[in-house]
Image 1 (cartoon, rainbow, N blue to C red):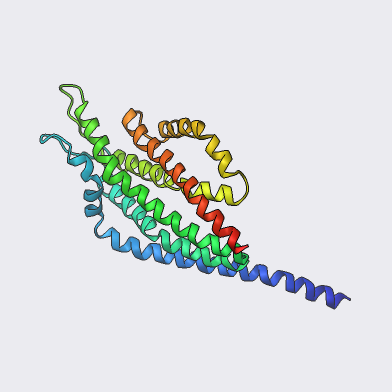
Image 2 (cartoon, rainbow, N blue to C red):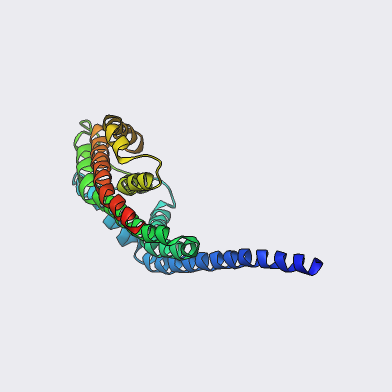
Length: 251
C-alpha cells in the first residue's frame, strides 16, 4: 500500500516539475531573445532617440533644442529607450512562447479561439502605437509649441520627453485592444452584445474619462484617445457577430 501511495505521489509531482521546467525554458528563450535585440539596439540608441523625438523637434523653434537636465541623461535615456524598444520588438516572440506554454492545457475550442485573439492583440497594439506616433504626436506637439506664452522658449528635457511618449504609447496601444476585450467578454458569457449595445452612452462617456486620465491635461490629447476608443468599441461589437457565429458552428 505504501508503494502505491509513493507511486501516486510521484506521478502527481512529475507533471508539476515538467511544467516548471517548461516555463523556465520559455522564460530563458524570452530573456535571450530580448538580450539579442537589445544588444543590437544599444549601438544605435542615439539614432533611435532621434527617430522617437522627431515629432517634437519638427515643431521646435529654430532657436530652440531639446536639453538634458541630468548629468547621466545623455547616456541613460537612450539606454532606457533601447531596452524598451527591445521588449516592444520582442513582444510577438514573447507571446509565441506564452502560447506554446499554455496550448497543451487548452481544449480544442479554446485553442482555436486563443490564437486568433492573441494575433489580433499584437497587431492592434502595434497599430495603437503607430497611430500615436504618426497621428497624435504631430498634432499634440504642434499644439504645445504654438501655445507657449510670449518670451518663453520651449526646451524639453530628453528624459521627460521619453517618459511622456512611452506613457502615450502604452495608452494608445492598450486602448486599441478594446475590440479584443469586447469580443472576449461576449464569448466568455460575461455579457451579451445586446447589453453592451444598450450601454453605448455610458461607454462613450467612459472613453472620455479614460482619455482624461491617461493623456496629458489638454483637450486635444483626450479627444484623440477617446474617439478611437469609442470607434474600436463599435468595431468590437460588429466583429462579435462573426465571432459568435463561428463559435456556434464549431460547437
